[in-house]
Amino acid sequence: WVKTWILKKIQNQIDFLYDLKKHRSERISYLNEKINIIDNLKNTLDSLNAKNTNEVADIIRGIEGTSGRIYFETLSSLLSDEYKFEGRSFRPAKDPFNAFLNYSYGILYTKIEKALIIAGLDPYIGFLHRDDYNQLSMVYDFIEQYRIFADTVVFKLFSAKKVNQSHTDKIINGYSLNKEGKSLLMENFNKYFEEETIRYKGKNHTRSNIIQYDAHSFANSLIK
Image: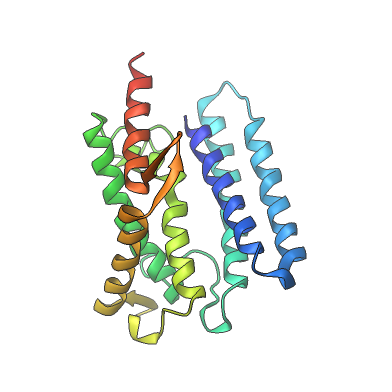
């Protein structure tokens, strides 16, 4: 299951970069190069077949980490100079983009936990994060395939120049979203997540419904 979720996460990254390439003809060569590297990592993961669980987990983490580093490096290169960033950063975010992304992931964590509970799944019992004591291990596992929702909302806010310096506050060693920033993000995240619909499994669904649908499907698969 973890392998399936991470493969979907990486494919989402590839698809997003392909979509961004459509409107950036001057960056096609660069984007193709990065897409090919990430795609090769995905293929390596897809062919992974090991009997030792810990060995598999370590390899998956390594592939996922490398893919993510290249992916975010690519996203940064497409932003205006003011908002380019040096990789992912947490507690605190070292730049406005990561401040928005961290908060967006936080919203998504809550929605994933709710979907798992409604589907009858224990959010504390996970696979890849199974050793994290008293942590929402299944939330951390299950969220991977949906992180693209948060990525898309945040990147579009920055690329459309809807974010400015008034949306974040400078704090010790980093940045934090302020009231205006949180309002901007929540408005756009909720519209993207709860109002817009996309085609999925032959029907139109909101992204919120897709997560709930997948949570139920996963729960049903465990009891067959």
